[in-house]
Image 1 (cartoon, one colour):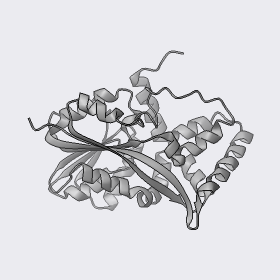
Image 2 (cartoon, one colour):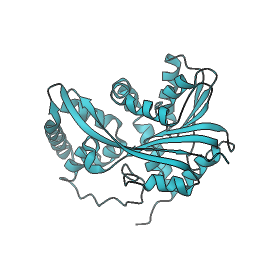
Image 3 (cartoon, helix red, strand yellow):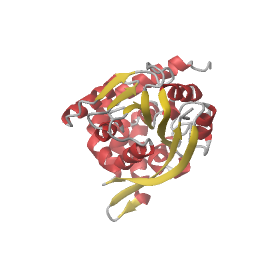
Image 4 (cartoon, one colour):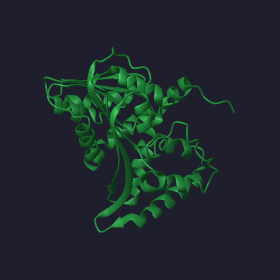
Length: 286
């Protein structure tokens, strides 16, 4: 089977994430409460402060663009870029509720940024870069639009075996269908999980002061059922796999996913491990 072109991959992703935009908005408050620490870490690693002009890549429903806008204040501004217009509409509604007038959202492709060179003080990106078909090209584009001395802060998923939050449903689905091993060079959740890979691409694009840390945490759910419901509302890749199962298989897969989550139960609910690779880098001053 012929490989998809970058344009085909991007269009498929646009359709997928538009389809689950309503789910992301439905679960927005929950995930804002559960994973806000990632937004704060990115804002810190990008050295955001009052008055800066910031670009957030893969903003989705506003992560971490909205926190960035609150941080840079009215003397600064944030542009959130994403493929999926429906996700960005949700982000815009959240910005309005927060009375943030210094953040705007627009659709666009990270590998071909629609901005002039050296036009941003900082760039942030949460769970976006690993889905790109041409990551080195995106790194070059980020370097182009950053001002000298500006920082990039990015979060991507780390190793599958440390991310039960993501891999539990995949393990169950494998019991019903053959899933070929993922192409390590193809866009996907764990595309940049290997230590040093994203950092190396950033160095190749001319960045300096590159740092990397595997950041361990967990996501809490009251029950396995609630975990499953959130998964099916927001996880476009899992939805695509479930669509290939029969109705009977879907019912059994749900039962097995909820059951397997029990191993992560604590006295106050379910605690699913996550591991995130946090990478920061600076564009040279000269």
